[in-house]
Image (cartoon, rainbow, N blue to C red):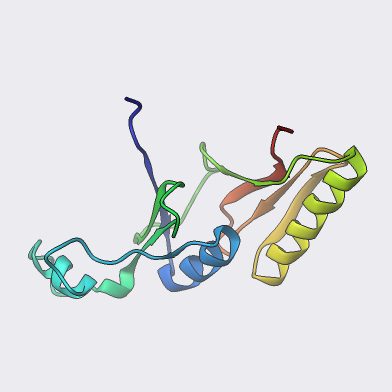
Length: 145
């Protein structure tokens, strides 16, 4: 059996980044693990320092359970270099190259409206973007089935 993975993004503002990635991926807030009814209860079980808050993190999941979970955690230090791992958002890959490129462009436009920005376009292939805190990701077409 293959291992399951979760992804974690360090950030300065968890609520801003969570809102962006929920829009980008169609994810929802992940409920706290049983038996806890709130994230605050769950975090308190770790006896964190008094200045830690549930607002310092966000836990997202694919509502269908197919994609990896995404944790977004506030850290004190700023990002200082390019991220070495990035997310690829895939649009449907069927149709002509022109149709695929239109879907890629439409998704990039949607993500700009959500707070992302275009970094570079590779015409007809993929678009490199950044989320509101500068984390790089790509928008591309999925392989045709």
